[in-house]
Amino acid sequence: MGGYDSRGRGGRGGRVRTFGTLMLLAANLVSLLLGIWYVLTDQPAGWWNLYGVLLLLTLLGNLHLAMGRGVNRRWEYGYLVLHGLGLTAVPILNTMASSSLSDHDSRNLATAIILLALLAFGAVIAWLRMQSGTEDKEDARGSGGYSAYGQKGGSVLGRIGKGLLTVWLLLNLAVGLYLCAVLVAGIDPGLLEVIVPEYALFFGLIFLGAAALLVKMYGLKKGFWRSTFRGAVRLVGLLILIGCALPLASAPKIVNEAQDAYTKAFGEDPMSVADPALMRSAFLLPDYFYGAKTGDYRVKTDIVYYEGTEGKDAGKKLAFDVYMPPAGAQNLPGQNSVLIRVHGGGWTIGDKGAGNYAQMNKYFAAQGYVVFDVQYGLSNKEKFVKSAVVPEQVVGDFDIGDMVRHIGLFTTYMVEHADEYGANTQSVFFSGGSAGGQLAAAAGLAPANPEFKGLFDPGMTVKGIIPFYPANGLAKDLGIGGADGLSDPSLLVTADSPPALIYQGVNDGVVGVQVARDFVQAYREAGNDAVALVEMPFGTHGSDMYFPSYYNEPFTYLMERFMRQYR
Image (cartoon, rainbow, N blue to C red):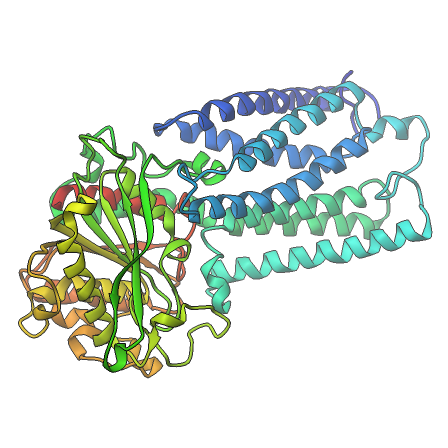
């Protein structure tokens, strides 16, 4: 047992490496135990971010160790493969659990198994390295180099396999560099922007794993070009990780600036709100990996609130899902106030349910709100995404006025059936993203406007609006008409308009950040300072999609306090 220096002899360098390996072994074991504890914790406090940092550093340390020249090559290759496949699966599994209406805690057990397995595997390779040393030991004894498959040279099929794997891994690194360019240089990636910044840390770890595997494959054979290749791969992998970690690194900036904006707009420091039912930390790094746990709630789906019989509504059927607090729940922050969520999709696609970031519905229902996830009529203009599947019964020759009218019809149904769902219709909030953000803002502001108030039930009182990257005034660019005040809700703002909390990605390529800034300016020009804009560095359109991300969690932290303050 012991380390070996570059000449194969024990020495100071070997002792340092042995100590580092020992520390990595300890980090894996501690992270494994804390991970089990974390998964079983209902409301983790902010100090758990220390565990998140330890977890991240441990994963990086395991990559560094596994790409080295250990004697137990199969174990180290196995770890690198598990790292790549596992960290590809984790965000997918987390997103699926988050979007599932029936997954009540919004966590996937397989995610925890994968992460804990990586830590256990990391502990094993650290222990084996301490026991057996590195290939330098074999060098000192006169043994030769090894190929990717542990044999010098290898068979023809082995060399072909190695070549194909090399090409695949190099393509991975090219993709990683492209994603870094999207984040740092603002290159427009098209619809890919919806997934880049919020999942960036996973991308960085995955592509760094690809670089580690390449270094491992070409790790022992000597020569200038091989050494240069390994050095270049290491550098590229490191650059990708740094670029992809920038959104995470901006989390403290997001939290601090959001706190300032909230305090200035609404006169209350959100960090000073003492309610044990609310989030205890604005962001939890372990949530990013394990997923954010949701409390209990009830849900009913596909409840029809309107069936059209004449005109452009003939044959159309609109429905909603309702998420309610658990039966008998008391002293929850929401106190049965209503949150109406309006899906996005460029006014031509989209639907309630999984596609409308369902964990937001689940989370706020568990907080004591009655959350309605509502359909409205979609325009039959060219689809925003041509391949998107939409329910045919909601598509028609509809403009923005019709869509707002449909939401208004829902408010009438809601007021009439309030007792059935336990909804307090005297305390209503509207929220939505993109086209849904524009419609939510219009529906929240229009009831106070003499021209449009007849569209909504007078038994409803709007207490606030929470639009995400609202596409105000942009429907006309798609050929979708409607009254100016409804198409651009900033025209409806008055001194008495309900307060607004707005989410906006700085790098949004669909709804530019200036649209949200103009909305804020409309409030201020009307003499209404009750508006806060939270701008997300590197954030793009849909960057709130991953619920436990460094974007969505801080905003949800503010949103729950905003609704508690104004309910």
